[in-house]
Length: 220
Image (cartoon, rainbow, N blue to C red; front, side):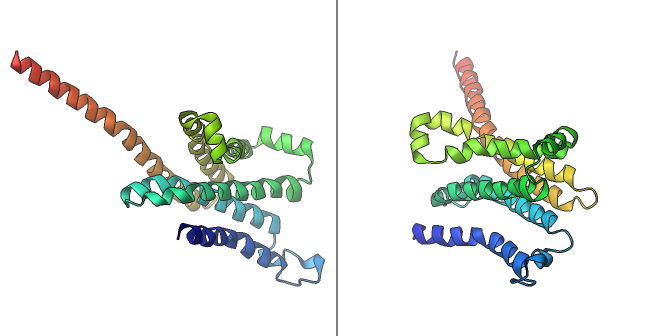
């Protein structure tokens, strides 16, 4: 059953790319001069925005797995987290490739100038770089090599990557900031859940210790 769900999830995760390609070639498939017309007046911008949107969406979906499996009592959801995370990296690669290839034509000088002058590009590049070690070490073999605790510590970089991704989007847009704010609200809720899950045992432990000390004082 899990295998079939993974297959459906894999195919579904490719739908945004397929839709993007369809819109790119839909105008006149045989006429290369019209490719991209289906994406509007600025097809490169449309591709960057679409791939960037889906990068953040897959990051949020990846982060949602842990609270969802605990709140819904569905531990099997953990089996889909790796695929979602890798698709976040996949769309991040498409986003980054669109920038360095279609937008900048591999002009390293221009790209470095962008990174230095435009803070939203600096933050976006940081978000992408943070995803690289997570994608590389996503296999069971790397979990064994690093050990469970070190692997988990490394993969907490996804929090910082997601935060940087939302900030990148927020600083990029100039007029309508509703979408990055919506992503930010979802991210804040997911991180807030993790913070509460981390604090609750500490508070409970301290409360139990205080109660025990009080009982011992009464007994004396």
